[in-house]
Figure 1 (cartoon, rainbow, N blue to C red):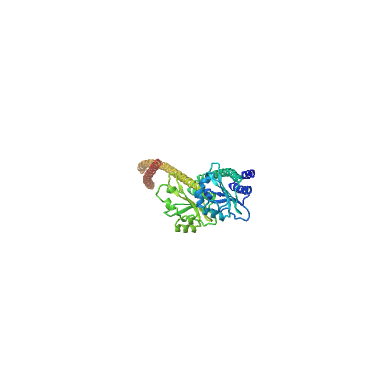
Figure 2: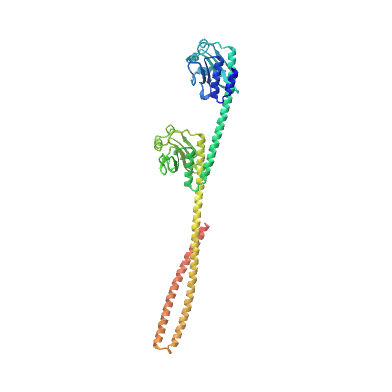
Length: 458
C-alpha cells in the first residue's frame, strides 16, 4: 500500500490530483470511513480540500471549519510534528467546541497527522475518520499514516514548486508577448508623419491589442471633460469623435500635485469604483462599463491629453501587464506627437523657404527688367538729344533755303519742321515721365531686395 501510494502521487503533477490520490490511498490503507486533507494555507485556511469517504456518511469536501479553539491550541504543536490519535471523541480530553465540530461530521474516532513540507512548513493535516464506531488506532497504523504523510509532503512540495515555475514561465511568456506587441505598436505609431495619423494609429492599436470595445484620445478641456480627437470603436457603438466626454479621472490629471498627471487609472466596474453619480450616468450613456485611462506625455513632460480604453459589453478586471502596456503606449504616443509636430514645422519652414525662393526669383526678374527699361530709356534720351540737334541744324538749313524755294514749298517745310518739333517735345516729355517712373520702380525693387535679405538673415 505504501508503494502504491508513492506510485500514484508521483504520477500526478497538480497539487489537487496529489491530494485526491493521497486520501484515497490512506482510506484504503487504514480501512477507515473517511480520509481528508485539511488545508492550513492562507488562500484556503480551515477548509477540507480533498476527501475520500465511504457510502452512508456525510461528504465534507469544501467544508470550512471555523474552530478557534483548535487554531489557538494546536496549530503550533502540529508544526512541531505532533500526531493526535483519538479512539473515542466523547472520552478524549478535548474541548466541547471540538467535539461539536467532529459530531457534525459523524466522526467517532480520528487520527490526525501533520502534512509537513521538506522545509518543515506546515501545509495542512492528513486526517483519518472512523464514523461507524470508536476505534483503537494501532501503532503500526499511526506509523504508516506518518510515513504516508511524509511522502505526500514531498509530492506536494514538488507540485507547488512546479506550479510556481509554471506561473513564472507563464508570466515571462506573457511579458514577452506584450513586449513584442509594444515594439510593434511603437513602430507603427512612430512611422506616422502627422499628429492626426499618430492619434488614429494609437487608438487603433490600443483597441485591437487590449481587445477593448472602444479606444479614444481626448484633450483636457476643463476639470471634468475633454474633447475627443481620435477614436477606434466597434461598429455597434455610437461614435464619440468630436464630442465632449466627461471623465471622473480628469480632476486628478488637472491636479497641481507632482506626479498626478502621470498616474494610470484602471476601473474594473464603474458602479463599484466610488465615482460620482453624474460621471456614472455619463459613462452609462456612452455604454462604458469598465475603462482604463493613461496620460499622453511629451518629451518635455507636457501633458498632450488622455488615452482611454473602454469595455462596453461587460465588466473587466484589468491585468497589471495590460495597464503597463497602455501606459507605455501613452508615453510613446506623446513622443510621436512631438516628432510629428517637428516634422510639420519643418515642412512648413520648407514651404516658406520655397515661397521665399519664388519671391527672390520674382524680385531678381523685376530688377533685371527695370535695368533693361532703364537702359532703353537711357538710349531713348540719347536718341532724342541727337534728334534735337538735327532739328536745330534743319532749322538753319530751312532759313538758307527760303530764297531758293517757292512760297508753297517754304510753307510745307515749315509745317514739317513744326510737326517734327512737336513730336520731339512729346517724345521728350514721355521719356522724362518714363524715366521718373523707372526711378520709382527701381526704388521699390531695391527696397524689396533689402527686405528679403534682412528676413533671410533672420
